[in-house]
Length: 357
Image 1 (cartoon, rainbow, N blue to C red):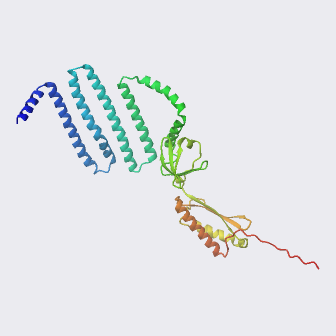
Image 2 (image 1 turned 90 degrees about the vertical axis):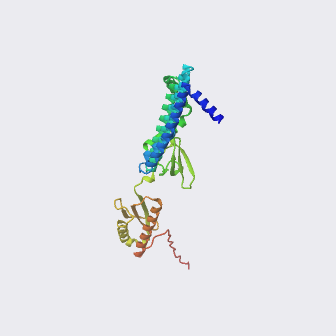
């Protein structure tokens, strides 16, 4: 009991000091605001999770920590200013600078987290990964550069001097890291021109490059080859090579030459007509595209006709299934006419030599 009485007496004496009482009141109010903000955000989070809009979820998840830290920074800096007023005016200026730098840092943290949350929300809603990632990276870089310039200005550094030095230094860095910059701008061109996206199947007739795009970075593009090996390509290379994107094709083409025996030449016209009729009504053939079935050439051991048509599917596996089905149906047509598919043959004529008498 004596200890409690001593504590109460000490507290009454301590709080009788106006400065101490003011500091205590500011800290207490800060703690209350921090608690109230956390409870309010929890209530809001419980409500917005029931909505279909992902943007409010991203905003509340992002603002929770920065807001709480901001409340404590403002409260503690005000308390520190009250203490500094009784001691030194220079300390007040330092507290103001620190508070402003902390504010810049919190805003930067908030914007960086908000960009990340919005990027994830947009991708989950089915947005284009290449475009969203590029915009998010550019905005993040802009936020960090702006925050760094504001912080340097707060510390008394000349922005014009920094920019001038940065221009001179940029020239030196450009010469020293020209390959790195070439890859960077190559990545920027990919994001702007969008010759391919993540998930596309690409190939280059100029280089041994073929596979599925896994990731597009600022320096490298990662491709997974059909042998499941990762292939890392500098972005600057894409500006110097030809590139095909089969993922964006509208149809797949079937172009095959088929030969029958010379002895079946009289049946060629009927075979060609029946094959054309088959393809013109085939459910897997795109009837809005070019369709050709014609006698083509007299070959060494066969008379040939060709088929030229386009499938509806662009899927690689499905395409080969359709192609197999069509070729087998053509084989049945040839057999139905009593003809046979030719194969390389040679005819040898033996001259009979009469023995000398």
